[in-house]
Length: 436
Image 1 (tube, rainbow, N blue to C red):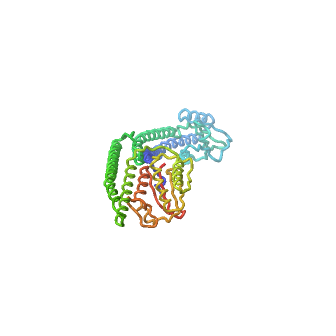
Image 2 (image 1 turned 180 degrees about the vertical axis):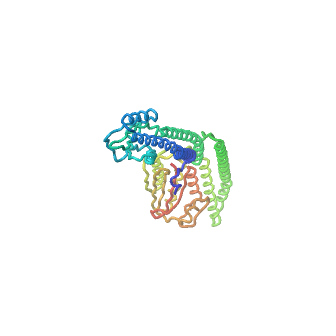
Image 3 (image 1 turned 90 degrees about the vertical axis):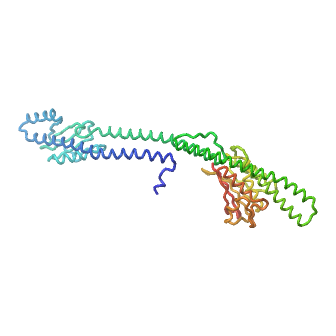
């Protein structure tokens, strides 16, 4: 359950790992400082003031005349820095008036309760610099005014300000450094994603920490090895297919000069199948060797062009594609892939539906038909090279089993994939999903 709420990106996680301990440490230091040191200091200060108020109150009650009381008030101001005066018949409020932002009101109340025997009233809210304490005496009250810094440790707010300020400063510095470190990883991820979609990303240069640079150079080396492998495989396949055409032409010429019979007809069929195989190999090689650059275009225009090609061949398909969907891809390759899916549907079905939709992450191109479909157990088999099904629905009946292989190769070359499933139209649904 906790994983659901944790950040998913590397930058957020690294920031959390670095910044969270800073704030936790500062919070722990603050708690220990206030719970131990600050509370102890405030308690001692409140106890001293409470003791002085109790002493002055007792001496005021023991004084014989007004002159002695006036002398005591002067001494309290000069020696104890307590401003005190007597208010006869002074109203005595029932409830204390406490500052809601002062966390040490309870400490002063507790000390006064332990020290004073008379009823008292405490006011920490009305005066910004003083604390007012009224102590019952006779028919009136002795009113004390004590400087706030004598009762409470008033530097607590300054301490909190600096603590929070330094925490924020350290957090910002950590975030900036982490952002610079993660940026090189993100650039590596973008270059890898671009290469996976068939783009070379030549502008990528390894940067950042030593480990990230090593990963970047390893990616560049891997990219070059993959490109060399593809080029060698394509050149070999194209060369072999091209070289096979010469002996195949001689065989066809020799067969044309032979009299017609059943054996010769079977050999001609085998030669025709070999010719289709070589043509399929060359088509696959041309797709691998294509250096077409990706371009941005309206997907609806491509799908309508495919539908137009089908209509000229005497077949009609329904197209449902919003006009606002744009995609960046290799136009000819994508047209060929979608065209193969449409042709497979037209070969075995009466109606074909071609649609497209876009989500936040993917663009989906769907081809539905009302044909016989195929067994779900063979959904992945039909994408393997040279696979031909024996069922009533043979997606490669007139070919050599390379059509859907090329479709998936083109889709994955754009960073996507092709899947098959049962269509709600009754036949087969082929879905090509490409990243936005």
